[in-house]
Image 1 (tube, rainbow, N blue to C red):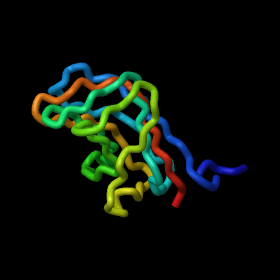
Image 2: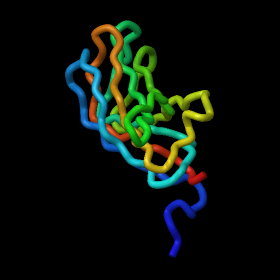
Image 3: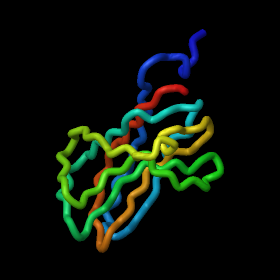
Image 4: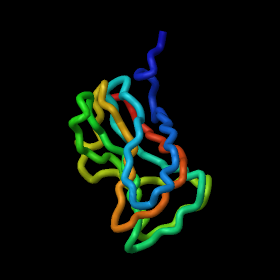
Length: 136
């Protein structure tokens, strides 16, 4: 019997993200527990609503690796709304970390999605973060 980690190519792990209507409130949402050691190859964000960027008051959506014991601080991918707008239901690539180690996820690590705010922030629509990964 073939196991998921034996499949070649990218596997897609979707993380549904609830909206956060309070602009200035940071929040963190549960995601996935890595089923095996993997390397993140891409992360996409699909917002359910449009977002108009603001250079002063914005939020940054992050994929965070909390590790198995919740102590982790690595951010494998981010999407800032300081400069570029989003359209509803249009998938877009999040920026991957330039630190290679941030993209290597151990079996049992907990990946979360976090909304960080700058100044008074922006409201965040619901959506889905898609994590593309390969077994390593």
